[in-house]
Amino acid sequence: MQYSSALPLLQRLRIRTRRRHSLELPPRSADETSPLLSLMLALAALAALAVALVPPASYLLALQAHEAGRLETRAGYLANELARRSWLIEQEDHRGALGILRQNASPSMAAEHVRLLQANGSLLAEVTPLEPLARPLLTRRAAVPRDSGPQAEVEVTRSLRPALQKAALLLLLCLLLGGMIFVLLRLLPMWMLRQALGHASYLATHDTLTGLSNRLAFQDRLSHALLAAHREGRVVALLVIDLDDFKEVNDTHGHAAGDRLLREVAQRMGQGMRASDTLARIGGDEFAIIQTAGHQPQAAEGLARRLLTLMNEPIMLEGRARPVRLSIGIALSRAGGATEPAQLVHDADMAMYQAKQSRAGGYHFHSPALSRKLRERRLLEQDLRQAHAQQQFRLDYQPLVYLGSGQVSGGEALLRWHRPGHGNMPPDLFIPLLEETGLIVPVGAWVLETACREAARWPARMSVAVNVSTIQFRKPGLCEAVEGALRSSGLPAHRLELEITESVLLHDTPETLATLQRLREIGVRIAMDDFGTGYSSLSYLHHFAFDKIKIDRSFVQRMAQDPNAKAVIRAVVNISQTLGIRALAEGVENAEQAELLRQEGCAEVQGYLFGRPMPPEQFAALHARLRRPA
Image 1 (cartoon, rainbow, N blue to C red):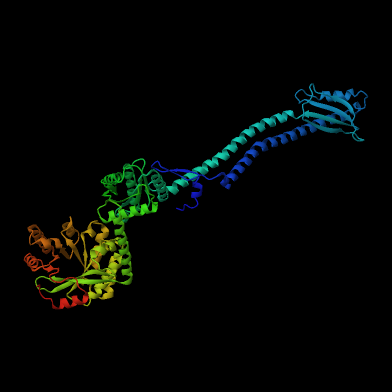
Image 2 (cartoon, rainbow, N blue to C red):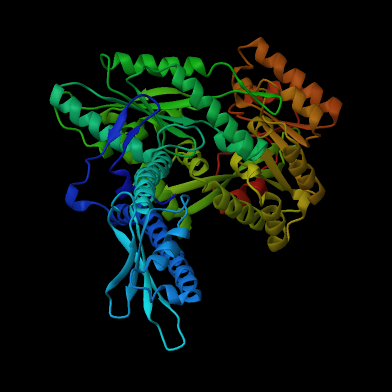
């Protein structure tokens, strides 16, 4: 929505938010009256004048013309009667002519004054009304015809006052109607305009999906709240709230379900707020709360806890319960000092991202230490993008060894990065950031292509294992990237092993199983990594036939001291043998662990005992000479 054209008109309106806070912009001065309103006022006045004056004037003119016609007819009739008896006019006393004039008078006729005039205008006879005629008067004459020409004229005069009285009454009614029309035309367009502007103001300052204040209204309210807090020495708390995994809801259930989720979340959050708090939707799945009352930081922390509690109950989407998890960042304004709204929003955003990184939801307060940490994270992200653009990544390979013969069965490709100015970076520091930023998709495609190209130079009996991130698996194009890497390298598909974790199968959707099935059709092998650490690892073996399961290193490292860990390894090995799945134990660091695994029947191992991750050249030399464990 574009706000630039709507806002100047909205400055004349008082906008109220859902949380009973008002946003009021200064009214415009009289000198800035809109030309549109002046034009509307002029048109309303013209319409009212037309209604008030045109009908009475038209009526009066029509009535005058009607009366004039009647008088002309009356005068002509009398003139014709006198012409038939023209000798009466020649009498000295003109009694005969006067009798004709009187005989043709009717009581039903309007009062009139009739005169018979000579050709020179002198009076011959006259019939006067009982009462003098009221002005204004209307007079018409008709000549008395004669063979030698007119010898006299008949003049008839009547009063126009009755017609004027009717016109005046009509004028009064029209004035009343015109006034009503003026008022209607003056107020109705203004009312309609205000209604339209009110609706436009609502759209400009509110989110149409949830009915909450939008980012524009939120910024205005935050500025006013910070100014008032600075004057009064109070502290304003800003909470920025993000819905975790909201994109997954849209991808899985559709945008309509995502909209229902947002409305339900907004309604629940409103239940946990005070009347003095302002709730706004400032992004797709991002909300913000301005808290101006209460003792800080206790009030903000209490609000955050209430919001988290309100989300404990899952939301039903398409008949399935969907848990809702919030990440809340909290920033406080400086007590007794001015705080810029943009800085407060930035601080709350940083705190929210810190809460999100915990992967468990919750809330987090902003602190200077957090700012430093997030600045370092931004720098790390910039360097990662540069590393991808400049191809600074490399692959090391850790041997996978047959425990019985000591032969290298293959190698696991591990991503490494030498960060300029910092040295080699631990994978657990930069790989999560690659996943969070989405860079893992292009970087993962590069890993596949490079690993396949390197493995194509190994002996035919050896395979290469590549880890596939959950983000890669959910994004489209994974199968195409695998096919492209195999095609460009010439590596047979059965020599490529893709390792996935339980998180890939956490949402057991048809799309996930379809992707696994397509990878199987390509011919690559699928291994479940970190087996035994999740809640449903065994159930996944029932849903999909994996080629290999990798026993997590935590069990291997404890098996010499913990009988339970040893029992888990024994059970996993037995299950793998029953299902015809290869089992590999990770994290083998000493000969004792290797011997115990051999006794339990584990055929394949991986760990520092047999080799640390190494560059491709060292790995090639290693698998050429390694025959048995030390």
